[in-house]
Image (cartoon, rainbow, N blue to C red):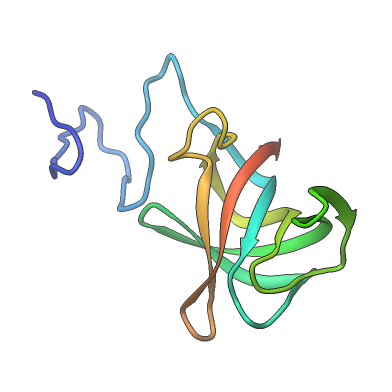
Length: 141
């Protein structure tokens, strides 16, 4: 009747619908936003720079979805604590970018929901984690 993290659960649904690993089940009264385009803060971790457009994958919980980093808007100058226009992010940079996903993602801004607003960027050619994402704005459904 009741479970919490880190317990595993099995759900038996009243209707026959296709639900698989990584899908989100939410209350009807409070569904998460579903979108293919978000604006996000990216913490870039890789030694190779990130510049748009870039084809990567995003891991959100147990789900792995192809994405394109469409636009790089700015980076945070950590010495001056100011945002500056940027074409690329170097290792350990923080930047703001627009991300387009190949499939809709259940997302919310990180400030509202840490679990639904955070993702990891993965390089599909090496399967390495190359960035951390915090959604700041859901742009379209």
